[in-house]
Image (cartoon, rainbow, N blue to C red; front, side, top):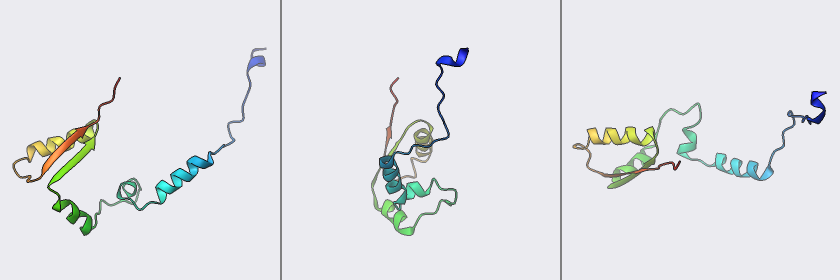
Length: 96
């Protein structure tokens, strides 16, 4: 018989790691704009105080990898003559 040496496991059982569950619940309970942007009800709304905070800054640092940073950099290059802020792009490269 072919299945003599095969051990079957009940895959319907869910074993949860309590420590990971506690860490994830802490992260998800924070009132964070980035986490809110991942919800289906997010409407791209920002408070005036958040926008005012970034308007006062003279230097911005944008971190990303791949298309997320390259698209932003392309828009910056196109509108460079209108932008008065100094912007640094930090590109994260994946090592192969």
